[in-house]
Amino acid sequence: MKTRGAVLTAVGGPLEITDLELDPPGPGELLVRVHATGLCHSDLSVIDGSRIRPLPMVLGHEAAGEVVEAGPNAEFAPGDHVVLSFVPACGACRRCASGRQALCEPGAVANRDGTLLGGHRRWTLPDGTRPHHHLGVSGFAEHTVISGRSATLVPPDLPLDIAALFGCAVLTGAGAAFYSAQVVPGDRVAVFGLGGVGLAAVLAAATAGATQIVAVDVVDHKRTLALTLGATHEAAGGSEVVSHVRDLTGGGADKVIDTTGVAAVLEQAYAATAVGGTTVTVGLPHPDRTITLPALNLVAEERTLKGSYLGSCVPRRDVPRFVDLYRAGRLPVDGLLSGRLGLSEINEGFARLASGEAVRQVVVMA
Image 1 (cartoon, rainbow, N blue to C red):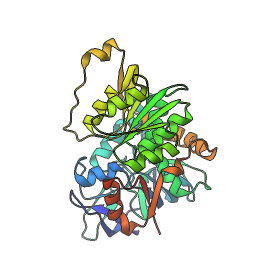
Image 2: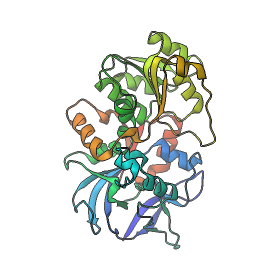
Image 3: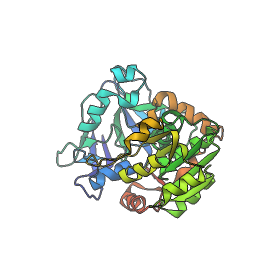
């Protein structure tokens, strides 16, 4: 079938809105009419070259839509509403079998190579070029073909522009608080970086019962927004932020979540963590970046430093859980949404994201 999508052909962009030919779904795959896709810094990292991906590529990895056609042996039916997540978990490798589907081994290979889980590419440009898939989703298109292992069923009355946020921002940020940091009632928490992922972590920390949540960012309006979403204090990012957070929390936060993907900020997040505390990082720095940490206090203060990919979530378990919390008013993720735009406005949207003006924008397909 013919559809339109946003294709990255060269590092630096811009994304080109173009016609695409889309093959029908193969075994276990789904043809999805995309309704909404979020703009995320992970997309921006591919555009600016911080994350190396094979090009050309149809971008977009945080999406929701409606199943139009199901391939042989697919688990879904036409009309199903689905959230798409960016790790197509095979369900059979040793990581999936141990409950760590965010680390699915075949899924990681497919994402690296820009294919679907089965190794296929379903796109064709008018000149015959076969673009790559972005993290198994490629949501910046009116229609996309995905592995059914990338999809989670959601209630048909859940607005799809809100549903899209659950595919990345909510899974990654809320999961980091609930699962990776294991925030519990009474914890003092700090969150560094207040994009969609960081603000989702703020929401989840409040839901988990943290008594103090310090929201850290260099952008004033993001800190102000965080205070409306559950943060109790705010701190401006910069050279004084560690001492500020330690003063606010009485010696350091019990759980610190860094979402920035900036190595120097991760070092600050670690320094702002209390004795016996846990530092969780969910940001994706450039592959060449390294960090330097004091070795002694890792042992003598029983510190924990851990990574969190996809919030250590299992999408088919956790998307329904988080949707239930949203519908109960306990995880108000609609507060993350800072704007809706059309596919033709996508480059302007990424400019707003890069400048810090926007938190989470969603491309809504006509």
